[in-house]
Image (spheres, rainbow, N blue to C red):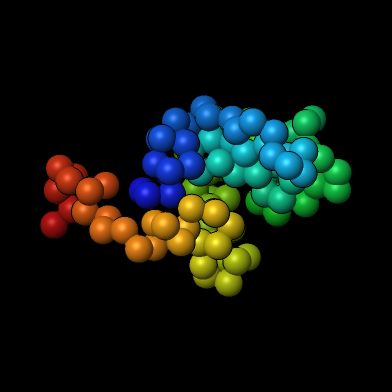
Length: 103
């Protein structure tokens, strides 16, 4: 929840401005089009490690979740692909789950 908040403010349609390497980040978790998704704007070489289009990341929560799982697994079961991870790691997550009845 913290990563989604800090990356996109929970906006599943958010597209980040161009990164220094020419890539862009897409969706709720800001999935990068050089490494994880692909589209006509993807810088080359494009890895597309999630085997998904960036449009799918914007429009399908199922595809987003599949890609996040791939990112986590390919990062040796860490959240390192997200620059905000060290900040989130230290946070009390209860602020993100208040009112969710997660008992």
